[in-house]
Image 1: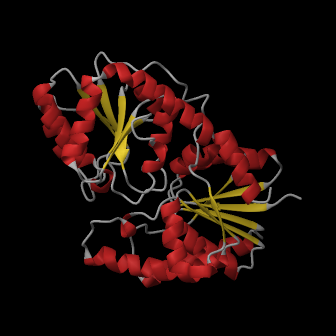
Image 2: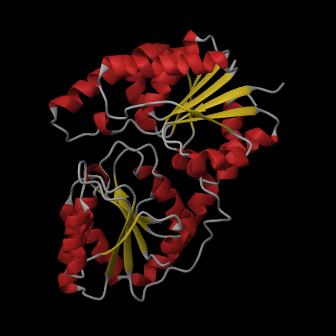
Image 3: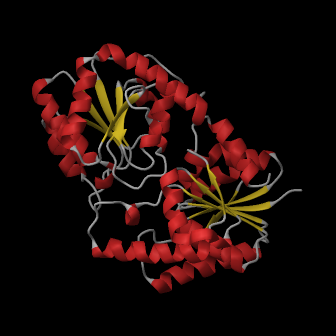
Length: 373
């Protein structure tokens, strides 16, 4: 039986980059797939159509709390889902899950699948903002009310499952721990770990909670003793929630970091990286960049934080440090600098971890089973 599937997310680039293989498999199996996104251009619509998908636009304010605007979003989704006679919804990320699942329930869609890839900024520890505290309270109420309206819930780590179980109690729907969205192991092939020069790379959104400031601080301190070591930063500057381009330039001009901006060829940079660093204290699902670094066979330094700790077996394929601990992060980096002979063995262990847990082909087979396809 073929389905009329609504895949409801946010940015087109993220949809194709992180879920492209799964969407193409759905089309190959003969299903009609509607790709709901918030930032379509004529060019991206053509790209979506070339893959056999049907682009559908809708509006969503990712950080907004205006109840009228949120209700308009739900109404938009309900109207489109109803008009398209959708038989299966697959929503991912917190807001699309909440509004898409509720709209699908109102439209009486027979099969509703929700996937939460990390609880995000409202559930990140260390925040004392009243606005974020309010957002967490609102989101918790919405989770408690709307998640039971899904038939299946997919999560990436146990911490999220424990928190949502505490919020929803025994009303939580059938839950699957996926353990990562997976990466293409053929595209992200393993290569030898380079050590001359030794390069530490930060790859991701340049948000404070992702630990970018801790990375910059560590780079500044280590450069004084190890001027030959390089520190690379890849990702889009964020002057509102993270670091601005102007601030990054102060580090670039002092030869502390090399900044490459947001890139499409991440694998090329990982092949030139010695150690991947993710000092995040954000409420992660399971970072895609960490999975890519594992696949290429790179040692990882990351935090003992939800969604991060799952990518490292401490002292085997990398090192775990406590979140927001500058000294611990520097010590871990110095360990890699002082003992480069261990990096290749750690990289080999990372690749084995990727093959075992993060092969996108295996992950997609599990997702297809959850979707009932």
